[in-house]
Length: 216
Image (cartoon, rainbow, N blue to C red; front, side, top):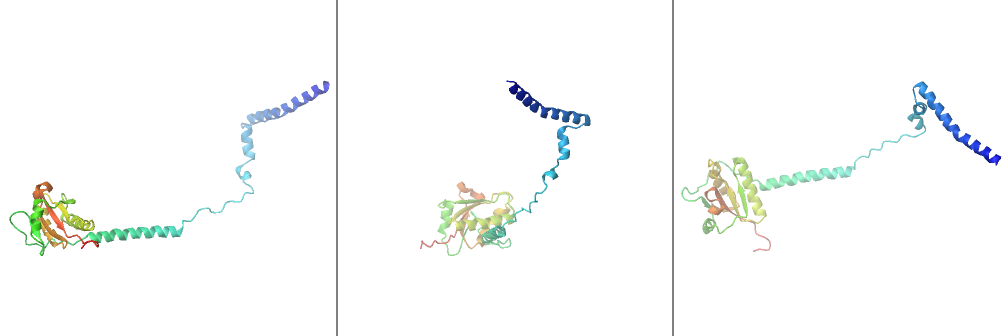
């Protein structure tokens, strides 16, 4: 029993030793104006921790040159494609050309070789426009570009009748539009639109669309 008590006292003494040393270090740190943690930081720096560690080599990954070249080629291809579409849709309308158009009655025109019966059909509204172009507020140059694009798109989509709204305003586009349309080789005819499609403020235009391979 006595032996057990002695062992118990010795164990308590061992357990109390670390606390005594810790309290002593804290007291000394307080007198010096520092704590034990700061003291440890002063004696153990990051440089000490990194001793013997080999620095990493440059780890920046250069972009794949093939990928970059492919992206550039796609951008160039896209620009060329856009440019080719612009060229296909462009047509050089002249402001100097003045066609021999009727001075009386509704505005109308029919290409040589076309039956004048199509003018009656346009007037009656037998043709329904599948596309409409509104030129309100556009300058002459803008109107010419839009008109060329409209005819190009109509032929591409196999649309034979379109409506062009020139409005009234000062009458500049209303006077110029018929002379533009006469110049285009793919305009078969045009006539002042019926009331339901704009009346005196618009023209119905008949487009010469390309024949399909499966049609005779």
